[in-house]
Length: 83
Image (cartoon, rainbow, N blue to C red; front, side, top):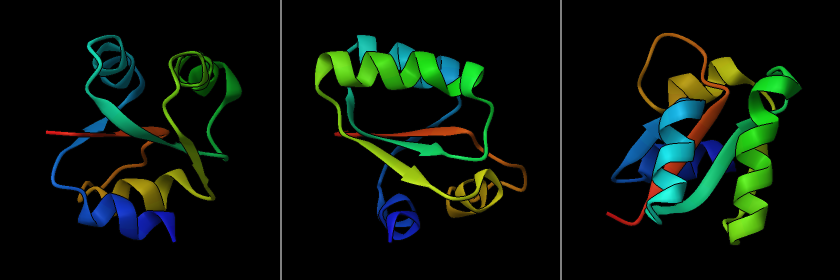
């Protein structure tokens, strides 16, 4: 399951702004997007990821995605970096 990939990642970037910045810097190897997040929030990151060839993985819950990152709030977008 995708949540396990996030839990096992050595470096995650949480949030749309930081994820987009990291993608522009070429640091992202995978992007995780919660399908229950607002589309206007997640669409820019999804479009950029597809444009530059970063795999996009969808998960069911932003609350569970946040939990997988070790935070107590939901996360709409999480990027995994190669670092």
